[in-house]
Amino acid sequence: MGKKGEQIAALPMRWNGEGKLEILMVTSRGTGRWIVPKGWEMDDTKPWKAASIEALEEAGIKGRISRDMIGTYKYIKVLDDGTKLPCVVRVYPMIVEKMKRDWKERKQRTRRWFTPRSAARRVHEKQLSKLIKSLDRKPRKQPVIRELLKAG
Image (cartoon, rainbow, N blue to C red):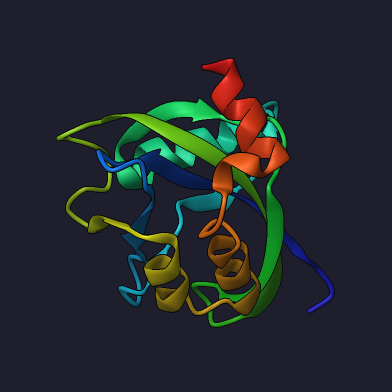
């Protein structure tokens, strides 16, 4: 277990018609647990760009993604051969602007919008849950999200 995994993730969000923040979650392919779109870093690709590629492949979404991460979380990834690899995931907030009807992994995953509190309850990783729950109150006041909204 010498090697450590470094992954990137998008945290897809939107404001609904009532002005309330919603978080888009997808199910994992293996266990069907609710997760955020994530994957391995990609050579010659900026980490936030890689996160937006994962969001498109796993959730069929496009939008504005921050170059600044909103936080990190750790989890144990079980590889195909059964090896357990500790991973650190850098999370980049993303404002969803388009949801495709047809996308790469649509037959393998379900996607659904949740309130931050509801999304936080569904994820298994404590640090990710805490990160999502922190968006329940005044998400627009968080510097990374404020910058992302200004950029739009």
